Amino acid sequence: MSTTINPLANPKERKTLCELCQEPAQLQCSECRVTFYCDVAHQQADWNSIHKKVCQLLIPIRAPAPFHSLRADRDHHQAQAQKRLEQLMELSHAEARGRVLEGRYDEALPAAQLSLHCAVDLYGPDAVELVPAYLLLAEANVGSGSLSKAEGYLSKAEWTVMKTPGCSQKVLQELHRNLGRLYTFSESYQSALLHFANDVYYASEEFGLNSVETAGGYFLMANVFMKQEKPDVASSLYSQVASTWHTHLSKLFKHYNQRGTEGEQCFDEAQCAEVDQMFNVMLEAEQQGAKAHPARFDSLRQSTLLSLSRAMLWFLCNNHSKALEFSRKAMECSLQCDQNDLSESIQSLIQQAELHLNT
Image (cartoon, rainbow, N blue to C red):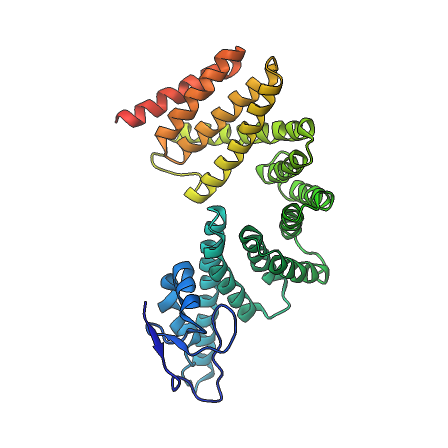
């Protein structure tokens, strides 16, 4: 990456704006020459987040369109530009989403902003198709602690949804989940619970009551109840989440064994890390509960179930050393509570993980 200060790069009547903050810009990317920045810090942030992957892709999109005398040629060029914009929007959204899942919120912001700019160019400034980019920007800003910016993006998303009749259940679910996250971060727990309840409702309508998507809303509600020092309510919700994920992963694991799909992953690395972190939160809650009530049989069973789920998760992500680690922890827990109904599954997983590690 290099920087060019080139005041003659564009005609005077064409104002260049910073890619990140939309302020007047004089720094020009010397590679694509169609992207501008107000300072080196913004250029570096954009490069690290997304620009190094899309630098050359931006040229045909942002460069002046060639003159075509025939309408058919003009239509073809416009269709190609539209297709490139769609691909760029999807790529930048995926890059931003991956960084959010990894907790790298600041790095996610430039990629999420590019996704929004592409969506505006494709659909216009008021289209419902902008909502996923607004929600992603809101989630990244909540993670980085910029609550006022997050609130601004969520307000735009909410307004767009309100004036769009027939908006999909998935969009409504994601909107309420992000509103719940914002209120949780600002410690407005009752408002957070209301939005997470709506999250669960719309997720169950779209994906089903026993889906892992719906379980995500229950997990976030449980976290709020833990913050309110209501561990019994939280534990009940965690149990439901753990059961849903165990069922889901067991089906995936069975399908894996039936097909014998060597090397195929059901989750990418970022998704796996996010789900594993959720399991870890629930395990820590169960361990705290077990310390408070040492004789609780259900805590040991829950720990067995969660450790087994973590083992299956990492096995499906082709990390067999972690799969073996957590399956052995599951076996330890099962022996303490005499969970014979799970011991066969655990033993089978231990054997498969050891086999992969020894070959």
